[in-house]
Image (cartoon, rainbow, N blue to C red; front, side, top):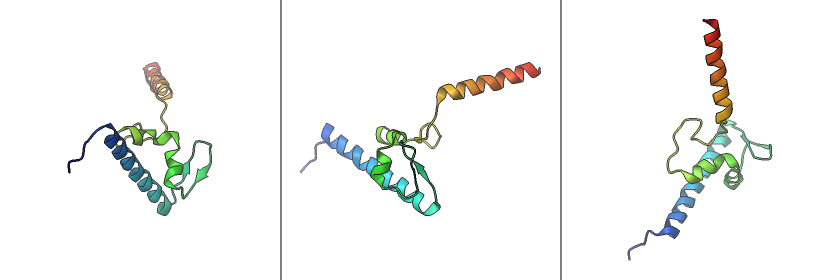
Length: 98
């Protein structure tokens, strides 16, 4: 019997991969003493995978196939506007020194 790869099948596969990733992230944090900060500000050392799945920073693992290892893609909090202002400040300071 041939399986049909339709929208429903892709959605199930996406959830399956996302669940595996959350289980892996939660298990890596248990042994190393890593802490996770949930959206409500609570610090958790041994979270269950669905506690991590509810966080906003894990959304990138749900929407991408293979996120790269940079801080922007791997789901950590990143604010581009603050980064741009910081880069502009550094450039202006270096120009003032000349």
